Length: 570
Image (cartoon, rainbow, N blue to C red; front, side, top):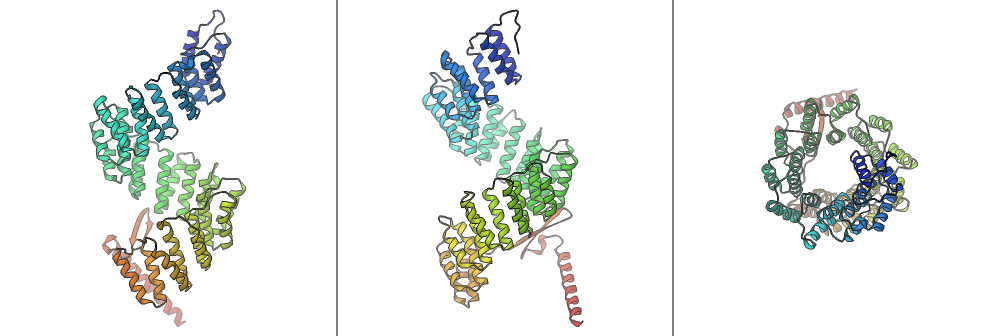
């Protein structure tokens, strides 16, 4: 942008023009005009540089930023607090947080904006402990009073870290020094909710004269994250304004606590209000369908996505793949996967796991090799999926090779989940000695991790009649805290197979003394879009149609017996 050539432009005119361009977010033009200014022989001042530094930060031009910083040092403007604060903002935007702190430390004088800039820089880069450290340092080193910016930034760090001590200290300061603004109120409500102090959060929420939708969302999310779903819904209904984020928070709560029908009811209600769901809502609902096996509902959501031309990005696409795979529609999952324009590690891993759990271990391995060939990054979760495929398919050699390739080729350290997959695979193949050796390599694992793998080996020892290994495992189980009923039940079963009834009695007595009881199995099925759950040994009245179900089972059993008798007579 060229200034008129009839009259020599002044620095003041350039500064006004730079400010106007920055306000309209024309940051590239700001830098071009700054270059023109320098070409005219004018000397930028402490009004020019902050505008330019902000533009450099937005455009992420590191070299340009260093040049402007050099000019500030050369002209002595680096000692101007306005310029220094702008330098801090620029370096924070460029991701150079250490230089941001260095500029702060070298400032001859710091104002509240300086302290706030450093705190918010640390918060923006996820260094929450450092942010709180700067807040503490501010109270020790300066006589400056924290303002709204200080409070809001520090409270956001407290929320993430669940640092109730500093959060309450700030709350006490707010009560004595401030009017409760919307920003401060929102930050306090969010902090107390994240720290689990819902009653205190609600008291602040109720005391606020003005509340925006963000505040309602924080309080609803607080109830949701602490399992108080009905209170969340009551508050949700009272909110005068509901944006897509608030709707999403409430639906996520229902999905998280397996109240999927209510999540779908809310989704339909959202549509009647004319609010277009974002991808977060759709992914949340698809996740709920996957968890509950609600295929019809999942298909309906997929239909909604197609009809409304929702962009199927890699997140939505992966959620669809995961839903269809977990509901047993693996061919549809494959179709969705190959129609995706962009796929990431999670997309590939979800399909590999889906193939494995649907009895297609060979295809799962083929997909794993295809993933390797196209150069997609493998992570530890990918290897859990691949080893699961080997386990389900009984591919011992492949499983062993892939497990050891994790460290040798991919530099990924195996975790307990990877050990568990291979140990279970070896146990199923009758390679009990190798499985036991592998368990012994799991150094430093917790009892909670070791008990399931010991149970796998114990179960295999029972199936293969290997009492010697069973006894060794039993000795090891004696040394760990076992609160899981399956380990004791398996051990009792091994002793029973060996006719060691006294040992069986001792195991059962120990279970009783420790208060360990065997929890009943549970299964669910979806019929006409409604999920039905059945628990072993459950009260017949737990399902409204239990009498009809039992009657049908009785008829089916009799019919099968009649058919068997007819076959024998022939």
